[in-house]
Length: 200
Image 1 (tube, rainbow, N blue to C red):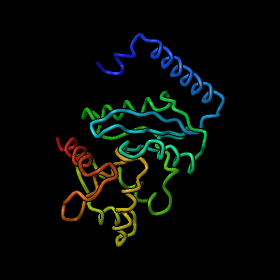
Image 2: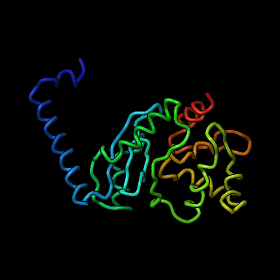
Image 3: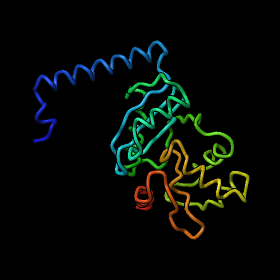
């Protein structure tokens, strides 16, 4: 019997439900009065649980939750705003598009993206990654050319590794010049899953 089954119908479950309802109400009220700067939620995916975060301009962070969730939230607080709440409603559209992507029915994302966490050359690299078509790959050197600095292929690797919005901005499509995978923030296994999905 799972913990959820043990708690079902119990006073503990009732209390958990009330806390969840209060959290949801707080998030709605905070958003209504403009006091919510960063909303977040978690979703399950074929590459593990993901933390999604959005400002009112768009999705600002997709984090693989093999990373520490508290550390991800602390980073958002430090870099964007401490006014962060679990507010799934703002992320519904991102979650839906991710579901469609993992189902193989979506080949590009239309959700607004907020690149407030990327600056300088890193930002220039991210601007060009959506040009790599679904189901194809490009080398770090090719992306460096697209970003206007042909010799900066190592910096492209850093930009991909620090991409704050992986999957939505497809840094997994960037591979080494010899065709090998290279590293990935979500892990090489996750990169293989994503490239395999797109090759199917």
